Image (tube, rainbow, N blue to C red; front, side, top):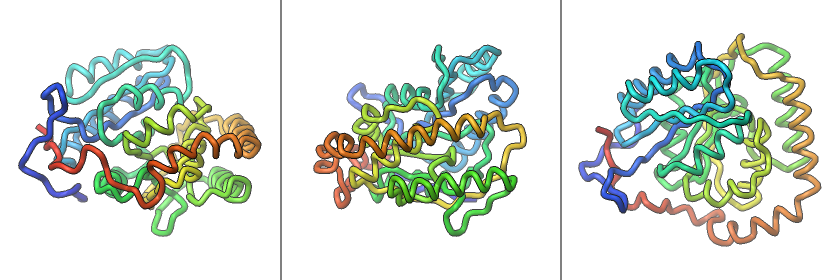
Length: 284
């Protein structure tokens, strides 16, 4: 199994004297009372074994009407480093925005509750950010070396969508929709106020804005297995995505103006990672 960056003996502390959280993994959920516990327990066990620094798992319950929040609260009590909170409105983007905005971690990540992506991809995803090499990191089902098992229809739609992004928005990344991403916290603070979408297009918009700001996006080929019980409405999601693409095409000039400051401060070539110049805090 993969192990993260080598351990250090010195603990880093924040201004309050508490150990700094290096990684915050957000799991956005809506009516997932049946699958949430298994997901969080699996991720928690994996991080305890393979991630030597302080971490947190955040369950972001967005507008669930079943017992999802109750399950999250129970996990919060049972597992060290787990927290759960509730949002009254739906939207994966809304859940990520809220979670990342309130987090004190140096690296912010998220993954889907179905754990379709093999967790061994988490090491290279996060390591590229912890080292300061990149600003964002994404799992890619279309990058060379990825292993994907999914139905023909979803595969065609995914490839078509990502090709559309390359043609219409000049995207340089290969897979906008894989639910397995991470971002440096300082980069998130800059980009999140500029992202308008609160639903499934959130990922795409974040990545396109990052590219336009000259930020580095690291792609990790993943092993990915389609969840036959996926609740994503492919048609409605595709329509929303197309609307988002059209909006971003029309707003290119305005986006470039808003991104100018970020590009000047954090653009390609300036990849130091504030807060990680000192040895990282170990877990437990």
